[in-house]
Length: 180
Image 1: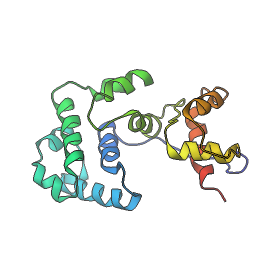
Image 2: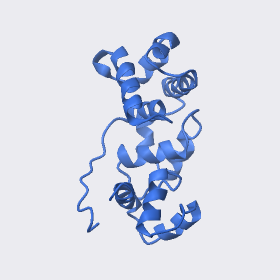
Image 3: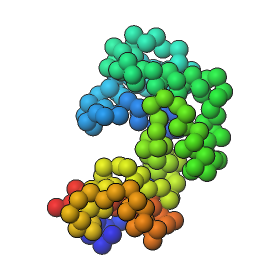
């Protein structure tokens, strides 16, 4: 914390939009992901990503925006579950972190990492540590001068002393992984 100073952070975005952007960003470099997100947003009035609109969008239109067939299936599964009432996104806000992981993990293309990003960056939950995230693992490796990337169990043991502020620790670990 002394090395990096205060990290200014404010959670933002809607749950559905955040999940859509996470799906579109999977396994892509930042600029490529941003380009596709921009093209997908351009399909909708005002760039708004709404469940009903995404669900009703013809697959060809999303494909033309650069959405892969696999991610198209993920978007349709997510939006369909919301439209059909299988997932109530407003109720998600009131759930525990564990309940949110369990609920959203049912959606194709959404796993624990995606939910952890939602918990931190959209919902502002304070005690989230995405132990499988490369940046977290690299940050821990650098912070503790480890010869190799730490395993999940090692990070969880270290994180016991960071609770209930693992999200804050995560922000610093991400910053630290790139420090010179």
